[in-house]
Structures are given as C-alpha cells and as structure tokens.
Length: 115
Image 1 (spheres, helix red, strand yellow):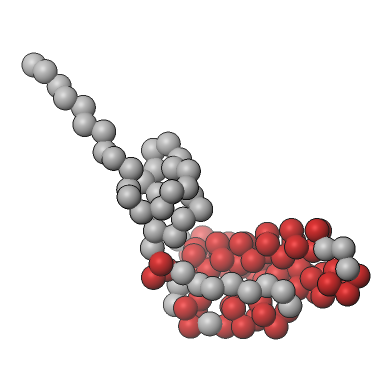
Image 2: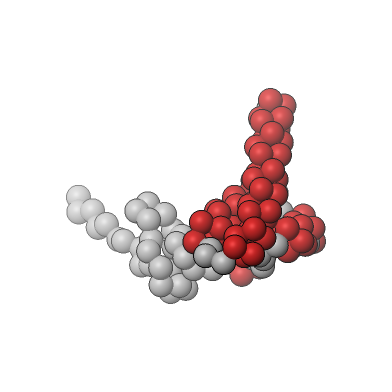
C-alpha cells in the first residue's frame, strides 16, 4: 500500500509568520469583519473604543484580547514617551487600561466558576 501525504498550501491571504500547526498567520487580518479599530492615546479614546458596538458584540474571550492589546500598546507608548505632558497623559490611559484589564480578569474568573 502506497500512502501519499499531501501538504496543504498556506492561505493566500496575508504574508506574516505562520505558527506551526496553525492555519492562521500572525500580523495579518484574515477576517476583517472581526476587526475593532482601537485608539489608546487618552482615557477618553479608550472609553470610546470599549463603548463601540463592534466591541460590545464580541464574546468575552475576544473582548479580553482587545483589552489586553490596548493595555500592551498604551504601556509601550508610556514607557517610550519622552515629553512630560505626553507621559502624564499616557500614564492616566495606562492606569485606566490596567483597571479595565483587572475587571476583565475578574469576569473571566466568575464565568469559569459557573462552568
């Protein structure tokens, strides 16, 4: 008996790295319908982003990913900021993002207890 192993070709969409064993690529948007545009320069930008209908319609797991993304980006921006006014503004945004991230963690814990 002869076995032929056929390897599936990479998806034509996107060009980023593709982790082993995954059909998805990193750094590319293969499903643009799932996209939420994110702003994080100020606390009000973050509040507006988290109040969007496109954010609220996502499952909690996806919302947590988006909150985590905002937290990481604002942290990096805060750490790299040189201007004192910018640093002050980003510190407030970073603190707010941290608060929302912790609230999301608590919700995850509550949801996991129900299971």
